[in-house]
Image (cartoon, rainbow over all chains, first blue to last red; front, top):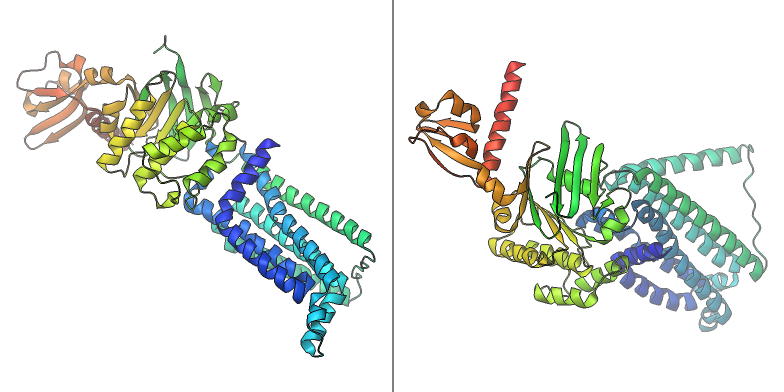
Length: 237
Length: 297
């Protein structure tokens, strides 16, 4: 456990020169805009936190830092597994911020108070503040998509190498497109029915949904990390 | 070396990569000494070092560091080893303070005061990105890191290549000071043999993946000579002892074991062979052997 914390800290320090300025700027901007225009603005700050993830590999390539795996007194597999947890955490924490911002923003409803005149902007703001399910739902969906996409990419890059990044993106995008087309076609032809998940009706139901989805995403991230660790742990550096 | 406690012992190390292989590499480094690990490019120095660090998986053989198995006990070993590669393996965009914050938790014996003192001693700025350091500064920085977690064995892979003479001199002085602690050791891979002649106590020469010589540097210096002169004075007996024989218009030169100098006519001259000479002649001999083999086929 201690080594995991040490490695999380190691990755955070590596990414922080880029990640911290971006995250702080986005947090300030999103807090202001979120309080006035749309409670779901915090989700953008969450997306901005990918700057804590993407630069890691760029720094690694630039600085021959892969060798650090051979120098640090920790198992290489643990380094890979911890990276998956790191990706989850750097998105989970801003997700909490986004939810908190949405909650405060909904309660204060500053946007509706400030923009009382009738026009299309004020109508859009009113809509944004009135729909809790869209706000909380969009934060949750964004967190899920970004977190799974980031940990998936990290797994693939660990396995196939950064030099194959373009190929990985092309193949993954093609597979995802094919899946979406196939799914759409099956739904259109009434072969399958689209899943109808009702919106939670209370705060408690939202908490449960968040807990379940976040737990599921954590499991997926850790599975990706485990696959990458097993396939790369025995590799030579 | 048998009666001294070894900090590093390699026994019959074999490792194959495509058409290159390490062949039964064996040597040991006693505590309190510096070993120069020399050989031409591609002779297997880096592969051996990677094997010691468990970065390469050995096919057979045994490596023990501080008496522990390099594979089974790699974590405990790495706590006590400092590694200096030919290039920086730390985040180049970070400064020395940030690097300390990253590395300190991994080492029980990390000494922040000693780290800052070393940086000051080596004239390394604390707030400057380490990627902006000169090559010499980067090498010194990696040594500062190694010394700050009280490494007992420092392994350096080609640290002086690409360094100017002043930076090389500084680096060698640092290693000299480090080894004053008799419980420590240094394995120093290089192809700049003058560095080895200056600071090493022991030398291991690798040639095409096999150990050509391992032992005390001073003994090696007494073992070989460079023989020069007119080819017409060479007898078959002397010729058979020559290594890396090179004939040219006005004569020849070759390496010869000092034992083989008995019976050499006065018309031929000889001088003590440097490690550089030895490397050059054994490399030539190796190439001739390859050509002979190819011709036979």
